[in-house]
Image (tube, rainbow, N blue to C red; front, side, top):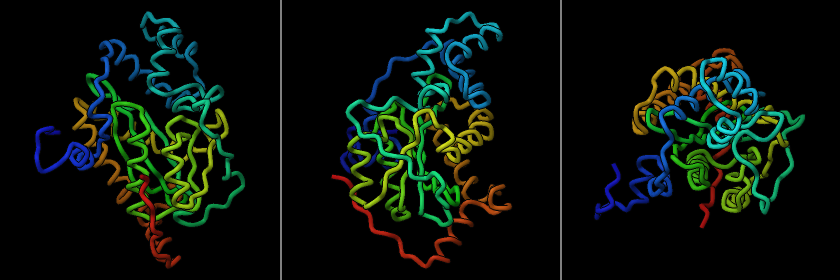
Length: 284
């Protein structure tokens, strides 16, 4: 759908309109075999139920399903998907050795209003002939998904695009919480937060429960949308995920809020507080 020869719209503008990252459009990945793609799908499904499975236990599980696989193969696929057992490492990617790790600020914090705390994460999305990565920004209090982006590479750029869209649409939160993945500890990502006066919070190493609300979002998304649709293409994945996100925010009752939707809780909180949206600064 991107036309490099289009005189009216640059590639950057076309990618923005399609909600894909520009770097993702240029990226030309080496494809995985059909068997590896199937194994990745099975790993993803099992990991939702048993996030404490490392590569050794996951390989045993797959062998019991009839697949002749070794630990090294499963470990490589899990790393490609960005997941590790919760007692070992964060579930996105390893922190970069040159990136600063910020303290976790949410312990014993009473989150009572919208835009007090936002959080983000990345998850793996299988499609027929490959896979994508999905990043989302969520309001901690209301559970509203403020923005999201799909990419075919786990780079930093599509995470920044999601962040900047959330800031443009909803103002700035007081605290932004992430895991220790290199996308979120990167200078480019943290600089956007600093320039907008946002406090940075990061999960403890291996502490997936520190960002539990967005982990629950991924579980609901995959059981209610991803696995039911079996996406053929990235375009279908974007369309169906977009429809589900709209349903999740607008019409899906949330048990935490006694049947209210995330949109209802978020909007009521903002009206009650009577705050105008904060201005945000786009990174250079």
